[in-house]
Image (cartoon, rainbow over all chains, first blue to last red; front, top):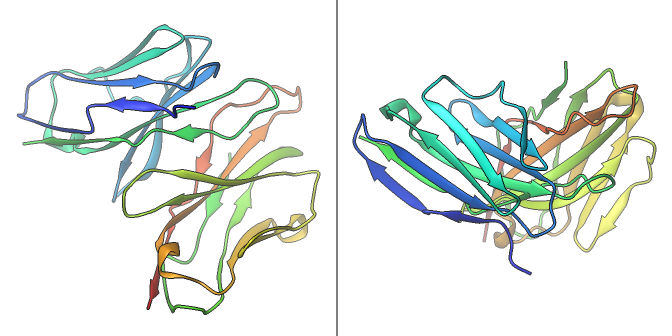
Length: 114
Length: 119
């Protein structure tokens, strides 16, 4: 079975540009999570969805960040405008519903904002 | 509030040595779940194990074993006869379930322990 798919794997962009990260969760999983990993702050949960509905976005840094999940098989994380401090690895993870608690992570998108 | 502490920032061992990675957690929930993840140099996060708070049996999977002790709020991970391929960052994580039985949904991660196994 395919795991969580993320694209692109690497993104280099200039400050001020819009960046869109994409995620396809494992088929049948009800939950989808977006994380950010940096050396300074470790792994941070940005937002998570249950059945395509955002449940907790308290980790989203600021209004420049937005996330959507238009259907069960696709989610996006958008940064507009991007800043150098947004440089990080962004992970998407998914998990099944009740009774299944482990999250399965995608390979991550390494974002560099110059 | 929930918290996971991995006090060992970095550990360096020589191949075939046994190594234990420590994890201490804090939660007010009576029911919770503990996890270990591995992040090899390639960068992906790989799920290793989940443990329920109501099951304190230790678990062994090949060279890996986990020791869960509620009395000390610890969930330690031991690799026996370490190998170079074990070199990675290892994360301990916690997920609580509130008294009403509704999961918080999200994991609280520790800062990770960098394990380097030298040949």
